[in-house]
Amino acid sequence: MPKSFKVVTYGCQMNAHDSERISGLLESAGYVPVVDDEQPDVVVFNTCAVRENADNRLYGNLGHLHPVKKAHPGMQIAVGGCLAQKDRGEIVKRAPWVDVVFGTHNIGSLPTLLERARHNAAAEVEILEALEVFPSTLPTRRESTYAGWVSISVGCNNTCTFCIVPALRGKEKDRRPGEILAEVEALVAEGVLEVTLLGQNVNTYGVEFGDRLAFGKLLRACGSVEGLERVRFTSPHPAAFTDDVIAAMAETPNVCHQLHMPLQSGSDRVLKAMRRSYRTDRYLGIIDRVRAAMPDAAITTDIIVGFPGETEEDFQGTLDVVRAARFASAFTFQYSKRPGTPAATMDEQVPKEVVRDRYDRLVACLEEITWAENSKLVGQTVEVLVATGEGRKDGATGRMSGRARDGRLVHFAAPAANDGPGAAPAANDGPGAAPAANDGPGHGNDSIRPGDIVHTTITYAAPHHLNADGPLVSHRRTRAGDVWAAGHAVRTPGVSLGLPTVGVPAPASTAPAACGCD
Image (cartoon, rainbow, N blue to C red; front, side):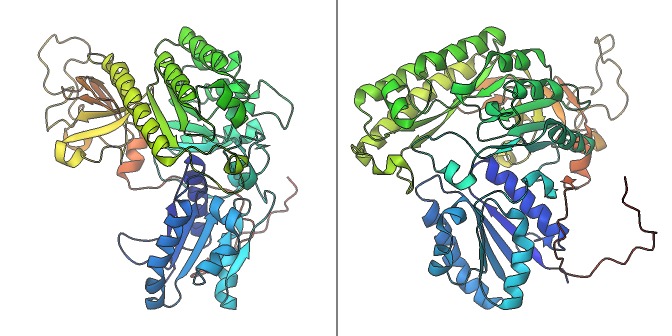
């Protein structure tokens, strides 16, 4: 029987996308995803090192798995990602029942390391200091049938004093535009409607091949991919953000009017201490230009509270920028020391109780603003890409959920049978009158599926979501919905790298060998 696997992911979108690569690698090597609550033969932890409790979370989970592994001979545990890159051999010292430790630069080695650990009956630790292969060359098992991440670069050339990522991911490495577009086209061919371009700093894309305007050109090129309906990206750096990107966003129809622009602090003094090479006037100037070009743009951000040396005056500066920027949402963080970063050894570490108080005040200020901004959409009709896992209470409320084009979360009423657009309209009811059978939600095989597109009118706003509790305006079935209904995961091929496989070998081909000269 083929061995089963489960991948547990902590951290950012980069980690989530790396986990898709890990799953694709394991499938290519002959493993199969674990079914429901069955005990997997291989558990892979893809870790994050950004947050203070990352270590505790990992070692706590490893502790829980120790007796499970004892009860299941042959089970293997692997730890990868940023924490593995940082802690290296320390992981097997603290948890000697771990079989494999691999870093951010050698994801492709995982099947080989698992096989070697199994053969040698000993832990395998392999951490490389530089990227082995660009992750996009690895096969991928996508978690979503309708939305996909596409990495355009890895690593970062910045030196923010609070961030350990450059030390763990390395210097920026850029993919060639043709490779990126080929992956986008492959995803669209599988039914994907939305892609998010990923990079630690997407708007410095092109630094390796000397094109300062490469990112804006890439956005425009995505506009020519037939069938691609939505393009997003994360995250840009304010210091490198240029007006050509704003123009590309505004002029390319499938690029969503959503911008995630990390602020981190509204104090110029703190920004300098963070080595963030911009100041608040530049930051707000970018937002002004974005909104001038795209008045409907939703702008989101990251903010850190309690950076070493932050005073009450500095914190008030952050609140001032938040009020001026009118964010649609924000990821907020209480500063925590990360060993290996310059900020960890700075003087004037802010007491935890002060950090917590400022954090609570920031969240209250943000929620007041995001609620007011969301309330402006009440009565408006929005386009929603139906999703899975976005509405945790959907089963109890009878709603479905998805994301509007600007990234806002929308919960909408799931129509009952014969209750949706196209259901027995009155005569002379305008465009769409007298639709064909099964033409609206709830009509047998025309039910709404994840990956479908609906238009719905907002009836209620909250700080973090919108509700649309009236009848749908329209529903469009999509290829992405078809793929979801068929139960197919989206897979994109990569370079096999000659990795070993487990399970029953594939039969030998009887076809004549190609000469390989093309």
